[in-house]
Length: 84
Image: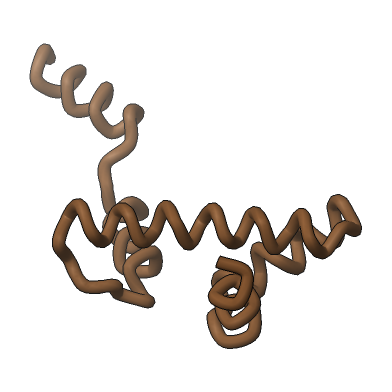
C-alpha cells in the first residue's frame, strides 16, 4: 500500500491536501503516508461494497447537495407557520 499512497499524494489533489495538512501538523512523512494508506483502503472497501465506480468529484457533488439542504432553523420556521 506504500506505492499507491505515494502515487495518490502526487496525482490526486484531495490526497495531496491531506498529506500536506498532516505533514504540517506532525512533521512525520511516514505517519502521513500511513494515514493516506488507511484512507485508500477505506475508499477501496467502500467502492467494493457499494459496487459503484470511483468518482473523483463525488465530494464536490455531495457538498452542493448538502449546501442546498434545509437547516433546522428552516424546519422550525416551517413548523411555526403551520401552527399559525
